[in-house]
Length: 130
Image (tube, rainbow, N blue to C red):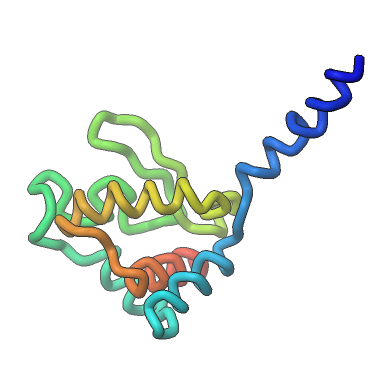
């Protein structure tokens, strides 16, 4: 019984660990790293633009996510992607590790490089406003 009482708090805390941040906290961290304030217009322009540095089959974020971020997208394999807009999916961007994984994969696929902290702040600011 004592063992159960010792590990029970761990299992009740696990769901809280999945939501370790907020979009505002992420944006503030990226702004601090970039040394500049985020700009939603720059985020929109980056997200919607056709790029040339990444993979040919993913020339834009909209290839998978669509230009209407309040609507679901679809991976190249056909798997559904929840909308990116916070108005449509409020739980988006509450797990810092997932956000970094998402930026790492998608920036390299679309841009052919990692996104800068400023670009991350800009895109998240735009998505938070949608």
